[in-house]
Each structure stands twice: as C-alpha cells, then as structure tokens.
Image (cartoon, rainbow over all chains, first blue to last red; front, side, top):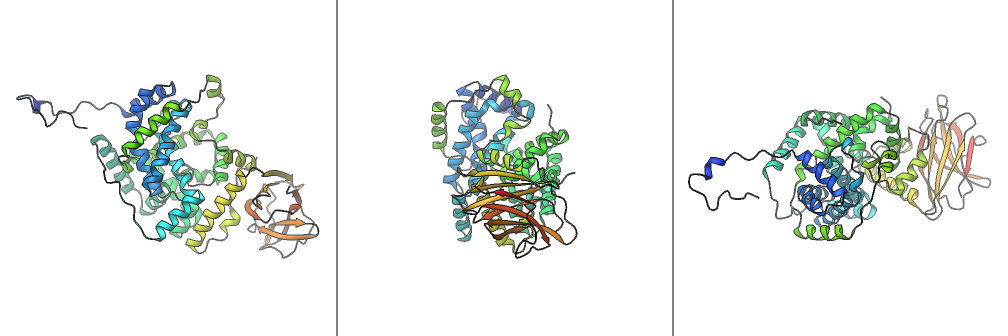
Length: 209
Length: 245
C-alpha cells in the first residue's frame, strides 16, 4: 500500500514530499463507483470491491464468529451489490451505508437461521474463542475512521454501548439483548435509539439530499 | 412518539423480527419526519462496520469477480425507480417480509405482548425468543401457509396465518376495544365442541400476537374476553373466529 516510500530514495527529493496527497472524498468516490457498477462497469466493481470488501468480510466475521461462514456471506453480499446496484439511490444515502446495510442484514439473517444459531450456540457454549484471521492489515485512512468510531463508542453511556454492540456486532435481537442484560424491553429500545443519536452526533453524520 | 417509532434504533441495528420490521416499514410510509432520522441512523450504523476491517482471504476476490461476471444485473428503469417507495431500495424484500406486511395489515402496532409477559430467566427468554422468532418466520414463509382475517363487530380484527405442514400458525389481534379492568382477550383453537386455549393477552391490551402450536386438524381460531390471566374454557361465544384451513 505504501508505494515509493522506502525503496530507491532519490537524493534531495524523497523527504520533501512527505505531505500525503489530499485524500479523495471517499463518499463521492464510492457513490460514483456504485453508480458505475449499476451501469454494468466491471472495473468499477473491482475498485469498489477493494474499498468495501475488508469491512464486508470483517463485519460478517464479527457477527458470525466464523471465518468460513463469513467468507460465504461476504461473497453473497458482494455479488448482491453487483446484481442490485441499480437500486442504489444517492438521494437516500451513501453507497457505503447502502452496502453495509445489506452486509449487516445478511450476516444477521445467517446468524439467526436455525442451523447457524445452533452452531454458534454450541461454539459459544464450548467456550471456544474465534481464531483471528492471521493476516490483518491496516491502512492509514481506514485506521483514522476506525479510531473515530471507537472514540465515539466511548462517548456512549455504558448501557447504550452494550445495547448497540450486542445488537450490531453480536447479531442479537433487542429481545435477546434485553434478556442478556436483564433489562426491560422498552428500556433496551430507548438505549439503542438514544445511543444511535449520540453516535450520529459524535461522528458528525449529516444527511444531505 | 408512538410505540412503534421507539423501534427506530433496533430497526436500524437489524435487531427486530420480520413482523416488527414490516410494521416499522409501514409506519415509515406515513411518517415524513422519520425518513430523515432513519437515513442518518443508517449512515451512523454503517460506520460501525469500520472497526471490523479485516483482510479477506485472497480467494474471495477471485470467486466474487468470477461470480460477478456470470451474474446478470437487475435493471431498473425510471418508472420502477419512481414507483419504489421511500427507502424501498434499502432492504431486500424477502417473501417473508411480504407475508408479514400482509399479516400486519392495518395494524401499526404489532407488538409481541404475549411474549413480553414471560420475561423471567434471561437465558431461557433469549433462547425462547430466538426460537419463537424463527418459528414465526418459518410459518410466514411456509408454502402452504393460509392467511385469514375476521372483523370483530365492536371494532378490531383477527388475522391468522396457519401452516398445516408445520402444524403451527401466527395470530395477530389488532385494534380491539381495550377490555375493562381485570379482563383480557384469550385465543382458542376450536375443534368441533372442544376449545383449547392458544394464549391470553395481557390484561388491558386490545392487540398482540402469538405463535400457535397444533393448528393441524383444528377448524377455527376464536377470540373471547375473559378474566385477566385467562379461563380454562371459554365463558362466552367467540367475538370473532376464523377458519384455519
């Protein structure tokens, strides 16, 4: 990912250009790519794949706790993105939100299907811990985004954070979350909504049509 | 804020079941101010994927691109685009969801109140909820599922989806007159002269829904008003009854 940074330094030049080029607006880029994909642009799909697949796969793995199933779900999601790209409407949200809405829903559907549910329960009951995929790479811009999300999760109250992470990363329904936390259902619903509001404000998410 | 709107957070986090999702989507259709909040929530929730960033196995790229090349794309003309409702493109419309919309009908308040009564042991409840949600989804998706509705003369409606092959069904009561203090609505599976209790709504509730077991061979599902907690046998002629097959 870091091209021309260490190898073959040109004397007198290499350190003068340490300022990174202005990052392209990722939203504009992914929106444009997804619209190109909707027109059948295979190259755009490849580029979009490279941008979103680490998060589609990572999210599926986080929810499913199983690399093999995560890979299957990631494949389903990415092919669905290709197949249904014409449904994306930039007036209704960003391309990344569109992609991750599909990805999260697919992962949750899978985790709630009876077979996967039983399998996961067994695995959790057996106390086994997920084996991290051994190669986890990092990339500067994405890292900043991740830090921002982590920081904003820290801004939530403990109870809001628990409710949101159990639902989003754990794939649990709010009923299950209520059961796990020993909390009344209306309280859990409120924590999820209030937590999202606080998270939205912290992340500076604004929706412009 | 209505009861259903409180589900906005859970809805965006995919933490609702199919029937609640359908009810919420229905609520959205009549709630202009919700659309903006929902759009922002979707953007916010999507950011939660950021920290999960993990390099996928290289083989994934190869197989996704290969499948992409042999997968035809959906085409959506301007007419289809305009005809699609707000936020319509955001969710996959599974057959289950369509069935759920049908089931929910005019009710904006499909709450699983019957189930809420049983919040006791956290673990059992979580497991039971998942189990019940799965069974409800299976009923709604069953190829032989039959939907029947009946109006209650004093107001409200009983809707039943029954699947003989699964021997299960889903009943939904909505818009019934709130019963007097100490009274509750009770559901009955009726087979000839025999009535078996199929669940009691919490006292004071005019709507709710529940999973029905053992529908096969039963003729009708009926509703009566009984003392809170339910009766062993119906104490009145059903207010409404619908056929199960």
